[in-house]
Image (cartoon, rainbow, N blue to C red; front, side, top):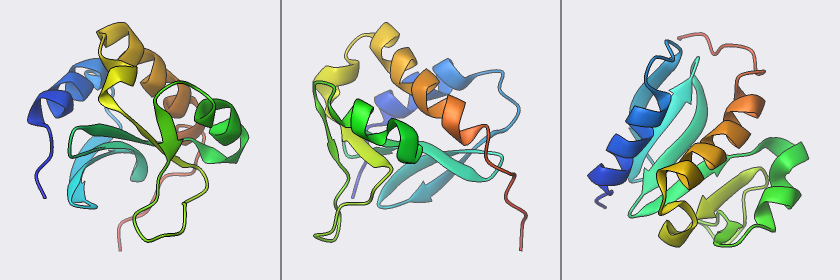
Length: 112
């Protein structure tokens, strides 16, 4: 499954300078990790976000956002945002700021 490289590049630009960010191919797309914890990703042409439990319901109520559901069972704390929801760079930045606040508070993942 291919992912939108243009969206991946836009995310890279927004996260540039954050030394804790790495990339990994996952879920048939590309994921961005903060200190080893999944932050966001690109699946096809959509934005995947790790919101955490506290932000989940509020962000789910935003236009163009829906539950992440790959298996028939939605993953709580994970959202998909359709392309219309981050068409402008300022919109993409807003989404990333929301989830970065949660993920940056998680303890770093240690490599096995």
